[in-house]
Length: 153
Image (cartoon, rainbow, N blue to C red; front, side):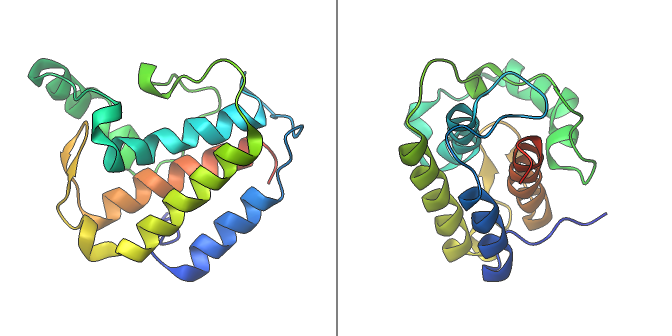
């Protein structure tokens, strides 16, 4: 199953529309995060690509393990399972401001679309090495869709 193309205006408008249906008190259908934490959690995928200094790059051994054990789960077209384990960098605890996290996430989504597919063709991932356009699309779209579905939007 191919995911919708996150690099197109139509798809990001749909995703942003779903985000705009959330409120700070929207509850998850599974998992432990509240809505502001989930938005901050979704921002991490973009922080890894746009704010490289914020998250240290994994060492060579860890990168090899990530490529062998995690990469296919993240960039494939297979949906994530409910309550799947998450990498430490993606764990969000403590209170977060809903409007701040919502604005950050929407900004990252728009930036990704504006940069376009060609910017991501063969681009090095923080954790997985070079990825194809399809793999980048799957990485971004699948993660957003998983968590928006988690919160019923």
